[in-house]
Image 1 (cartoon, one colour):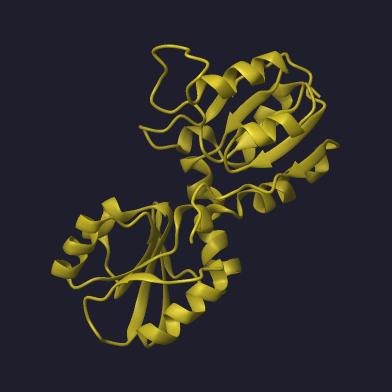
Image 2 (cartoon, rainbow, N blue to C red; image 1 turned 60 degrees about the vertical axis):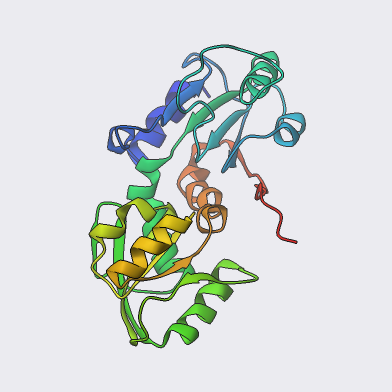
Length: 241
């Protein structure tokens, strides 16, 4: 199947025009005329993945391999080293990032992973109710995301009624939150300080941990194309000792 046909199907599933202005979703590497033999779904691309896939593979990732532009191609550096290998093996790449967050990922995590009913949404923010103490809900979150420890910001001790969720990195939206608790990843020190001031509890659900469902979600939409679709066992770049 030509890459163009797959791209059009992906655009129907999750329109690329929905992506944030700063994002780089879409065709990252390859040609629309390219014949694709198989499709691999992964959060990211690394050397191990490139060694394992066949020539002519299309890798559909959540994160764009090229994000802020490339000023030089030093093959000893990231991402140039990966791009060189991909060109050599005729491996194409399409990224579905913030458009997929809006159309699929955030809702899937809220409903399928956490088992909650989404009450309303404001672009990347989803809201649902829980009515639980922080300790009880934290244990539920840890189990759902496979977290071995909970990194949290405790700004109040009220029962958690309303929860806001944004997978990946959503801490920049702290001031927009209208909830007792915010679930997101990549919470930084100064984010925590601001949340304390705002009286907003937070739980860091991890960037990778909250987005690792990308492949299984998208595979369902691609299974009728007649292609071999493989979900890569994406690896968290962090190791917890």
